[in-house]
Image 1 (spheres, rainbow, N blue to C red):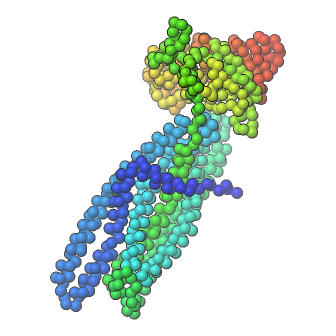
Image 2 (cartoon, one colour; image 1 turned 90 degrees about the vertical axis):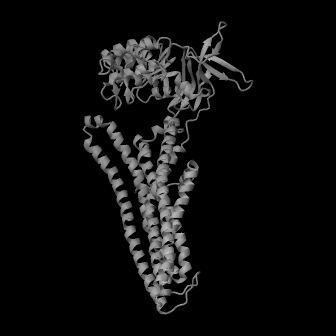
Image 3 (cartoon, rainbow, N blue to C red; image 1 turned 90 degrees about the horizontal axis):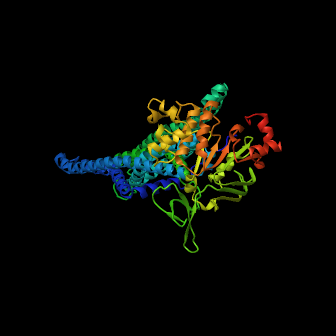
Length: 633
């Protein structure tokens, strides 16, 4: 049984309207006034028609056509003037809405992207990239359609219906009740048919996001798909998702395409009924029940037929907007859901500052970069400020952690990494090695225990300052569209070209960069698709080097580099690691032999710790791993 898709939250439409009038109060007020004026003018020709027919009837017997024309011409001139003014209002509000819509989308895209920068890593671990991309494409587009077309149409049709409703009772209450009965029937059918359409349009909107997420996933993993000959299975998976999208879209448009012909034909039937009933009222000389007190005749029935067509037509117009409104609200709901996501919590107040050492050994904060960093620690009790040198002393005390509250993945982790030490983590996949480094960065917060950095509780340090003091090289290298120089400078945006080149030389990347077509000015696209995996990894190491942090985290940093390149990188890494606290995660145990401390993890617990020689002498788990194969897996 298919799980029902959630509907847009109640209040989403009002929030869209409130957002429009909050961001553009003057423009939206003028747009609303122009729409109301244009709609009101389009509703009143029936009044002029009644007057013209009455004049013609009054002068039909005495053949005083000159007098008739003299009375009719001013009416036509007045109506023409009103039409010209309405045309101008129509032009102004359409032009204004085009600008307002694009500015609204511009601001919403900015708000979404700004919120994405503040979301925790957990959010991106639980949402597909393609689905997130759908916020910026499909959801934004459906909102654009609703704001630019449906919103003005709703106001326009609403004003026309209200005006025409009053005019109908001004002319003839009998016929007005007949038209209202027909409109009630049309509204009932619109709700039944349009409601089904709306439900499937919401499903279609979410199915599109699901489809885009799958396609994006397949594009990223295309090599894996081909290597394992998974094309047919991938096609079957796509067909299942595509069938779901097709089914929802087919039903949505089937309902939508059925609604308008039904309403149009009901409008024609209502028109014929008004003509028949009106003719009967004229023939029987029935007394008129109206606000005007006019006698029922051609001067009443002819304009009333025009009103009937206009009234039913605008009901159809409103019904036609149901689909666009529902899709727009579904998109707006997803957009507002992203904007309303809880940002990453940061209660830290200890910041990282440039410092200068005084003659007495104390530190003074300064604006210029000195190469010496300090933690600025304000004390709320007495208003004093103390400065602690940034040394890279990282310690875990009995830390427990789980990605979910009901499942703990790290148990009683205690680590003592002194400045300048190299700490290595080894263990099977899923043992908790990367999780420990994620806690150092505060990508996730611990459930129990303490983590101290230079003696400061890590929760007291602002996350941006904490992460600025850490350099990280991941197994999966991420390169951005731009030059090689710009990708290296990503580690520290204010770094000079000379500093970037020095960092690349330190990492062993300088030689291959100089052999690229434009050297450091070579533009990388597609995540550095033109480079080998090893070259991309070297650039990631150079990026970390230019940041020049006191603590380095190397998560499988050399796993994708061949043996020859590894020797080059290892020399650069040895230079980079001098005087720094380094956390190394490696499957190649040969790369961790020179570590000060090697910690062996198993199922989230540290089961062994010590130097390479001491662990070999113990002949425990590490001995088995090392002597069994250099490759842990």
